[in-house]
Length: 167
Image (cartoon, rainbow, N blue to C red; front, side, top):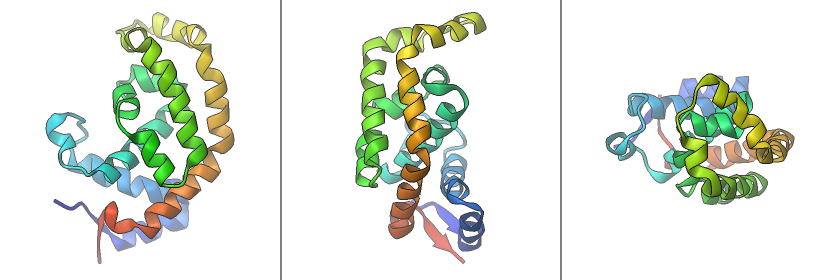
């Protein structure tokens, strides 16, 4: 089943910027899966689509609350236990791919701790406990603009892998 996006929506978003352009894809995928990531809904997306959706969650969560928030909000497995970092490399975002591999190593070493249910107070304390993510978050903000632009270019050049465009 292919996910359809209006050409006009893509054109308008592209004029607004790279993030808006990529967000059109993420929103189409979220609509397709009813905003629910589960075994049944995951079958509705192909690997390329999952990679862009993972990028959406990754950027949104890391921008707003870092890796601790990404993981605490339930996206750790989706980002780190899937070939997301490899996809980033294929998309040409080599620096972002390396960053995700480094974060995955930390995630894998502390998975049960990072994913446990927490109170608000315990959640906030995790930021001190996992300061090891701080340098990766800083690096993300340094490389984000160029890496996201590279990914958007790849998507634009290979759009048929991500959506079907309709007039």
